[in-house]
Length: 106
Image 1 (tube, rainbow, N blue to C red):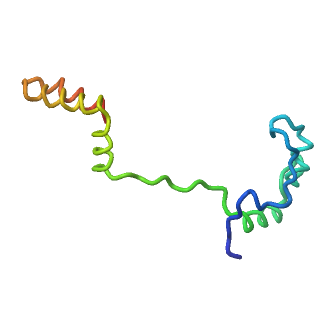
Image 2 (cartoon, helix red, strand yellow; image 1 turned 180 degrees about the vertical axis):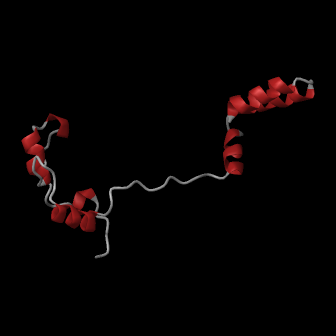
């Protein structure tokens, strides 16, 4: 199987779309612009496009570590106010309220 490479959409030569939003085009215009038929792509054409453009997948989103997400909370005044309120609720002997406040922020 040949190596798959990704090609930016600006470099795609066979797509000759009119300068109109795609949702305003007729189905026939869209088929012609993308070089397909009403029945879709043949297996050979699908494989060629897979090789040329790569798989139709989105990259996995980056996950931020818990400690970074916590420090993000410290940049907003209202978030700081809620953290202080949660800590004061624990100190005052109402842990249920403290947990409710802290969980509302996460």
